Length: 485
Ligand code: B12
Image 1: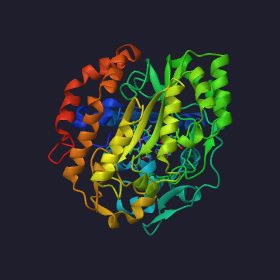
Image 2 (image 1 turned 120 degrees about the vertical axis):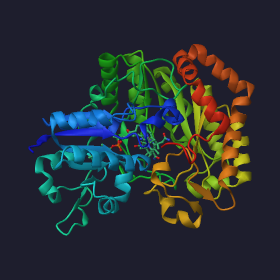
Image 3 (image 1 turned 180 degrees about the horizontal axis):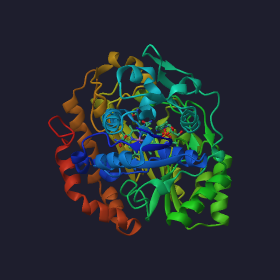
Image 4 (image 1 turned 45 degrees about the vertical axis):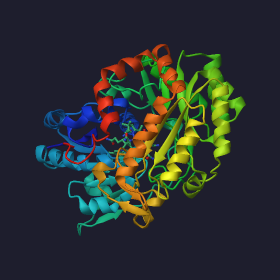
């Protein structure tokens, strides 16, 4: 059967059975475009290869569409982007693809694959090639060289003649980000309407997410840096401005969520970008995530003038001793001061927290609640700590508590890890208590009421999904054993 060696289907797996998609509260609240796949697609197309994307996360129940595509287009390649929780679903889809189109080559990339490298190729027959790290050049070179010549391409793991996984080594240097074409958003079915930022996290629609840098120089214990390592490469202010103008003109986008790990890491770039947004307004607003060390009042005022609507800040935990065990510059006083400056500049703030870190106990959770509720934050997200392969803490995690390494369940929505001295049940109770205590505060409730005019679309989505949210708040059991995932 002749396959088209110039064609690839890129797939973003859902991670579980399609029937469970509606009750996945984190998905309901937040579906963002797979920017890695869209970037790969744009890069390959520029090199005159043929690419399509199927995003099962935005469109659950896409198995039939994938099969139909394979039968009609006969691509020689299928590529999957994998987090830890979606990896096994990618393996399932790869097996399906191989049944449907014998001879097709399955290439996997993304965070989970970059972290575990050879192990995955050795353990899963359905994985032909694993691309490690940044994928654009590696995938392009692989498609040009062909499967049989995979060994000649840097940045991938392939199976040698003895059937053993072999890594060709990291690529020498990262891509110059301004040389990349804008991601191929147009290849995402239903874009931008099929995608939605977290509820109450945007003032207007259509909104989307965008990424303007790769990597992060910090080394927090819980963060996996296997894909872009500890470097920081970024788009210039000019490229960024043109990217936004393109999103606005081509897709009518009115609000952007920058998903950079450290948006303000290079101050001058942010100043230049903000000045462009002020001098040549696009009528767009934006959110970004920052680290407290890399903001000051002058910069925040400039960002506000340029359209910054919300800034997210990693707090992780309000227990300073615990924080110091997991990240550099653990200084809760400085963090609080920066949060106050963000508010003073007239920008909404969102705190990003984790519960269940190694060393966590009931007292540290109480301290965390006291700390967070003493701050003028408008919104927060509390994730359940999950030790991902590739993160520094993963290496010693079994010494620090009970860890059930079931990849499909490692989605930050369950306590797969329970620190010494705690139980899963108690963590769940305190998790619910944290959220309930937040929502019971009159100031916070008023904040959500004010979203009626600040973000009317959020309220429409909230009401549309009220049943799911209430079920989640009442029981928090949607992800427990016995559910069909
Ligand atoms: C936006 C985002 C999302 C979006 C879109 C996901 C996506 N696949 O793009 C949404 C909201 C859907 C999402 C959901 C989740 N996410 Co998320 N997400 C991100 C975030 C912030 C940015 C991703 C991105 O656009 N990066 C920029 C692009 C250019 O890089 P990239 O995606 O890594 O792709 C490059 C390479 O990895 C490689 N590559 C990637 N895929 C492929 C495929 C092939 C075939 C090839 C050859 C190469 C290749 O080439 C790409 C270009 O160079 C990352 C953090 C980060 N900084 O990357 C977390 C991150 C990927 N997410 C993470 C997690 C935990 C989740 C959730 C489990 C959380 C949750 N409860 O919601 C779910 C899982 C959903 C799922 N089914 O996988 C973790 C994954 C860790 C892990 N080992 O699993 C990350 C790394 C954050 C972190 N540090 O913890 N996420």
